[in-house]
Structures are given as structure tokens and as C-alpha cells.
Length: 335
Image 1 (cartoon, one colour):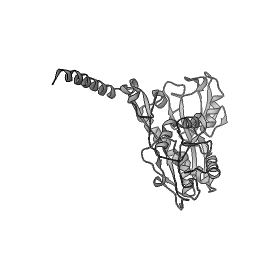
Image 2 (cartoon, rainbow, N blue to C red):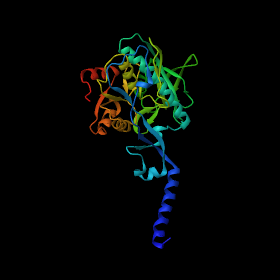
Image 3 (cartoon, rainbow, N blue to C red):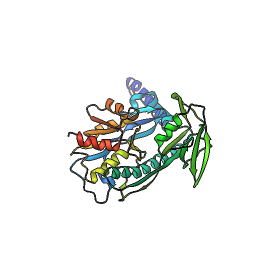
Image 4 (cartoon, helix red, strand yellow):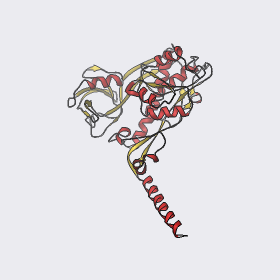
């Protein structure tokens, strides 16, 4: 090999080896990357369906993976449109990766139960749905709740006042100052007891109390028809809103007006649309699928994040499922 060529090849080989090593070493933090939005029609089954008109409802997810040392050091090696987030944003202290994966699967299962109830109720179908409390899906290690609460506990009251939804629970805890105790009435294994749980400050928001639990809606639901939803290994609660929109479309409500409608948002049992994560990546995923409208939650700046990454894509921010139906009827998408 000529000497000059050797001087070029050897450094390149060394650089390649170093890059490969750095790529294989995990770093602190996770990467959220866009995934292309996908239509729901083949994943939702509703007895007596008679879909109205052309067009499709799309759901959109984001890829989540542990960052490598190379990706942490050199941002240009990360996937296009991705964001590097602190490890605790995705995997709270005391929660293993396997536990987190199981949680997001359970969040999806609950979403497939709540979305049909919300959609059918909004369409005037007889739905028996009763919020029974707030179920603990995980307890974060090193927080006041550790050792006091456990996964599966259902919180039914705070300081003697009933709570039936996660929003009510957050509001009730939020009335305390960090350092104060919260008196919780908890149902577990058919028995009801009272526990006192301390509070600490949220690290990023001093003055806001934290007990150290992740929660979801506990409810008893009976539907007039059996709705089946299956989108494979996708996890999390953020497909609740598109699930409900697709159910409405399949039962004759013209939500698409011949266009491609993407949506993201967790649904509460009362039809509220709750904020979700990775909105930047989901907006990019909706754009890449060529949709005509992207519906997002208003809370936590979700709609602002979507508009900042829309690049011409029409964004609709909503706070409830009924609002989404109303906006689609009175201001239909253009395609």
C-alpha cells in the first residue's frame, strides 16, 4: 500500500473502530424518534360497522430507545427529528426497563377499554361506565410512596374526599405543600384502609408536591357491542383519541370528510383528552405519512409543540372527544 494512502486509511479505520465502540456503549438518557403514522381501519372491529365516506383515521407513535455514548456526544448521529431526554423522563428511578415495558402495555390495554366507552357514549349508545377510583400502576423508588402504596392499589379518596379520576387525584394532592402528609383511602384485595403518605417537591418544579406514583383510571365498563382493537406491540395510552375517532367513523360519523386524519391523545373516561409525550416526533410522523390534519391535546403545550413542528400541516388542539367531533363537523379538513 502506498505510504500516502496508508496515512489516509489507518486513521479512518481507527475512527470507525472508535465510533463502533461508542455506539455499543449505552449512555444516560433515551432517544425519542419519529415513526410514520399508520391507518387504523384494519386494527379496529365494530359489530354493525358502516364507515362513512372515504378517508382514514391514523394513529402515530414514537420510537424510544436507550441512547448510545456516540449519540450523546455527537448529535448528528441521532435519527432525524429525534430528541435526547434524561433517563428519568422515561424510566423513573426505581422502575426497571422490564417493568416500564409492562406498564406501557397495560396503559394500551386500558386505552382500548376506555376509548370504545367514550366513543359509543358520544354517539348516543347505552354505555355503563363508572369511574371507581385511581389505580396505582407503579411506585417510584426513593419517594414517600415507596413502602406505603403498591401496584394495583386503587385510591378512592384524598383527605376524606372522594377521587374518581387521575385529574381529581392530582388536584387533591396539589393542594398540599411539599413536606405535608396526604391521607389516602385505598382499596386493595377487596379491603379498604387509610394510609398517610408524605410529599416532596417535584425536582423541576419546586413547590409542587410529589408522592411518587404513576396512576391510571380504574373503572367498570359495560358496552352495548363488543369492540376489538389490536395494534400489536405499540404501547402507552396516547392512541385513545384516534381509537375513539375510528370507532365513530366505523359507526357512520363522517369524521374524515375524505381526508387523512391523524390524532394523538390519552382519553379519560369522561371524554377529556389528556396530554401525551413525544409530540414533536408524532407531528413529524404525521407529516411523513402525508396526513391532512393532526389532532392533539391542548394541555401541557402539546398543541404548541405540534405547531412548532407542523411545517404546513394543519393542527387542531382539543380538550375533549366531543370537541374533536364538533370541530370536524363544523370545520372539516381540506384535502
